[in-house]
Amino acid sequence: MALAVLRRLSGALALLLVILAGAFALLEAMPGEPGAAFEDARVPPDQRDRIRALYGLDRPAPERFLRFVGAALRFEWGYSFSHHRPVTAVLGAALPWTLLLGGAALALEFGLGIPLGLWAARRAGSAADHLVRATTLAIWAMPSFWLGLLLLLLFSFGLGALPAGGVSTAGADLWSPLPRALDLLRHLALPALALGLPAAATTARFVRAGLLEVAGEPYLAAARARGLSESRILWGHALRAAAAPIVQLFGLTLAGLLSGALAVEVVFAWPGLGRVTYDALAARDYPVLLAGATLSAATVLAGSFLAELLHAALDPRVRRG
Image 1: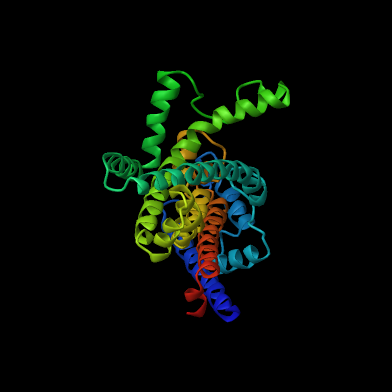
Image 2 (image 1 turned 120 degrees about the horizontal axis):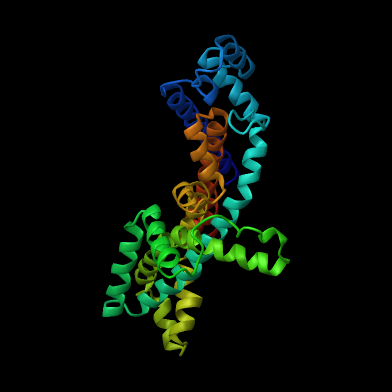
């Protein structure tokens, strides 16, 4: 088991290096030069040359890539062109907001998806089940940014019940802690819904399919023969038996929520990693883009690795394999 874990870990690290090389090559292929200073005609040519030398942009691309990888191994991401401060400080300021948004979306996904999947599985084949399947499929197929725009149209511009973007109301830093927390929750509601509802639809469909797959197992019939209620059978026996794919989905979704929130953060002006990456792309801030790509890829690979470990812990057949 330990050898298999080391094999998977080394494979994930090799894949991360390939992803970084691809991201670096794509940035190198972009027209123009990094940083706004190189696009400004008012900057003298000799000053541009000094800026290139300062950031190491006068060196060949392979050398710059190796330097980036070496610095990344020491958790040194360089200096941001647009923010004029270390990249670690830029990402460190944005990361808590992405974690907050991702955590709220994850709670919504499993808090809504698992009960909805159970409810649909208990009514398999009924009109209610068909309605749940059609609704979850429609929500799952809807792009997150489009769902976010619909939520803005309904709750912000239509009803005026929730703010349209940002993380706080102007002047909220002067309020007492409880009103500030409630104001933050109001600003969090719409982006969390835009990110969490499609994931909840996916989870509901996974839970329903997993429960129906084990519905005919003999031990469930034996549990019914012993007089156990349907709710206890579903929650205590069937859901546990169908837990392996749900756990895998949890690991993959966790990574996706943290790394795939760019569109939602841009729509709602949420100051997380997605918004920082979007702004860095517009400013051609290569150090921030490379660091963001590294963090995003590492999060996805870590989530996949965690999903495999949890699956192996639940299923002895996977451990033996």
